[in-house]
Amino acid sequence: MSLRTERYVALGDSFSAGLDDGSTPWPELTVRGLRDRGERVELFNFARVNATTEDVAELQLEPALELRPALVSLVCGANDVLLCVRPDLDAFEAAFGGVLGRLHEELPGATLVTATYPDPGKFADLRPRTRKRVVEGIARANDVIRGAAEKNGALCLELSEHPGVADRANVGKDGFHPSAAGHRRAAAEVLEALANHRSEEKECA
Image 1 (cartoon, helix red, strand yellow):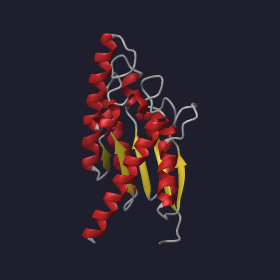
Image 2 (cartoon, rainbow, N blue to C red):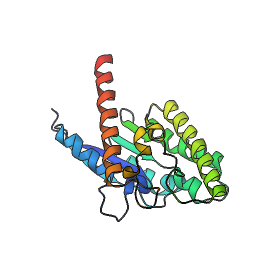
Image 3 (cartoon, one colour):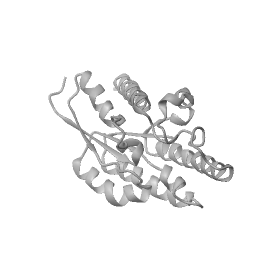
């Protein structure tokens, strides 16, 4: 076991930042899980509520790069859809790809993790037209996330297709954000993905 303390930086929106509802955000739970495995990890969570991908690029990316982390999670895009009447998915693709691309280029050897978003129209109280816009927008954003992850060698957690998203207990009262159980489920998925990734790296070494 290495005695070196590795840095983990979380970038994104309220999905990673958490809300003021008493729930422990999944990045913190992930670090606890890594420490339980004997790893020395320090968390820097730069994610912010209501952050768009442009916000991540302008306010979070540079501090993250300066820390030279070994692990980075980037989960954003929902606000690019939810906060706009006419979401500009081309702008989102450029911004998200730009952030992930710089992480890949400037942090060689770092493990990058991203995730798709569950259907926000499943439990939220939305009008039919709004629901249609949001569902279609998130689906398109998820396609962008998948493509950028593949291009930049990032692990992409398919939360959009996870059976747990159909469980109301994993979603908060607002119908959008993870509940305490949802954060625990997300952390478990990240920990499993990291374990599988590291196992594959050892096999290829």
